[in-house]
Image (cartoon, helix red, strand yellow):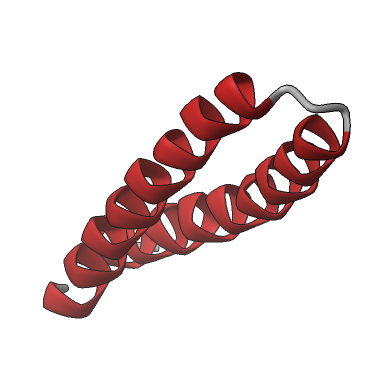
Length: 65
């Protein structure tokens, strides 16, 4: 397999991996909110937004290939 093929696989893998973590982060945030740990939940929500932006960059990189 050539470099470009490997690059596509790597990017797709990272996207999938990040999407899985995103789901975990969201569930954990809900648990924090249920436990009245809103300050912690707020920081995790901020990180979720950053993770979403990061994944969008990976999607754009994959598209550009």
